[in-house]
Image (cartoon, rainbow, N blue to C red; front, side, top):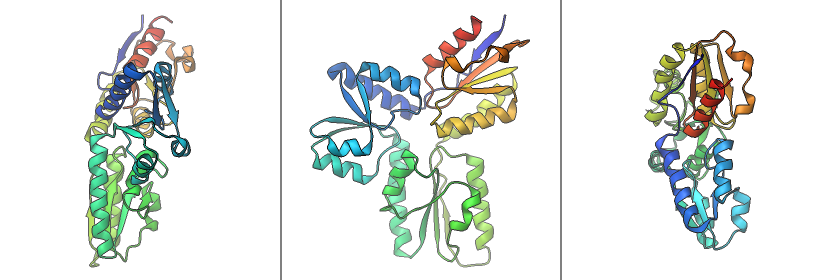
Length: 287
């Protein structure tokens, strides 16, 4: 008999919980709701909500809609989206994560300061990611995006630097970037303001997951393929336990993973629903 345990710290962060609750609340009343982009980076959860009446649209479709209700997901949106909504008489149900909204405001203020002194605003984040698009929108699309420390040479080290981070980036990577920038401007009069804007509910998961993974023979990490947070946490799992496998649905499970295995741990991203991890647990127990 294999002992299977779900990581009790895995699953939705409060921002995702809030967005899904808002969607379910509205779907109970009207059975129809549009969501701008995937409500969460997990196909199984998206399919569940689609059955309740949620329709996922992109920004091009948004421009065509009139007099409809649109859900803004936890990632947040740039000012342009709100402008379109006003022009098309769209009712927005804004489920932007409070942490993201606060960051958007900080970036807007930071950009105004940087612009006033001919400085630059740098965002440590994934280019094209929904949250980052919303953040860059606060700067009239003038922010510089750095995906990793390998892209540090994109920064103009002759100008003042205001650094911010996407909320779900790796904290250690952010610290390394900050140290490298400090080295580059050492001995100059360049002003460098580093703003640690990483969500602690996400970053603290990495330490917790290391402990959980080290205690199991095999780890099944459940995450949507599009989840940036999922990719980061999976790499953390893999570094602690080489017998770690990432799946997005039960059909991807390989029975050979559990040969001569006594303990299995199940964990997931902040966008992974608990019900999906519970289904994975039942499937493994019934092998």
